[in-house]
Image (cartoon, rainbow, N blue to C red; front, side):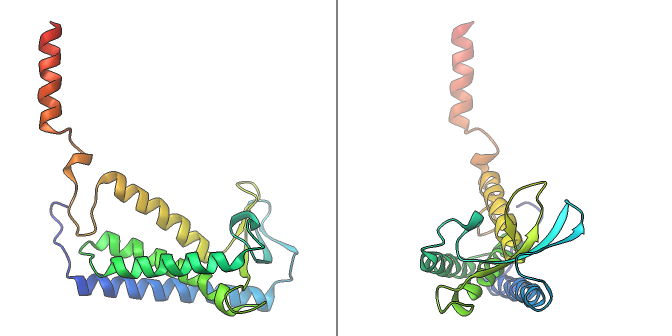
Length: 191
């Protein structure tokens, strides 16, 4: 990316690690507060219908899908976390380091629930508590927010052609010269 110096791989790894730990800690702290202070399965209005707290334990994925195969989500979260950690070793982009650090923290937040919450190791239920019924029927948590925002940002970075090494893929921004030359020839033939 023009004007932005690349960072060392060690610096990128440190950014990923720090952000992952901060997001994981925030997620687990909010889940702790939820378990200690909110009634299970009761709506607690914060801003009317706009924002509500609703403490549930989710054995499945979004919208409680796959609640009979919780262990599959544990495996998937483990694979995603390992992939992010592996990719973190080749990063030279601050932006990618920030995005992957936040995404890793979210993944680790829900993986922690899967591994260490009831009913048992690897099949634990994720603690969810945030509800916005006007927007969607899902109930989610802090980790979910970072996962969704992280995945949207990953998609945008890919669309914009920003690589892990901090460079930009020019093909995403400009048509190839051969395409431009072919277009000019086609226009000249038509006239």
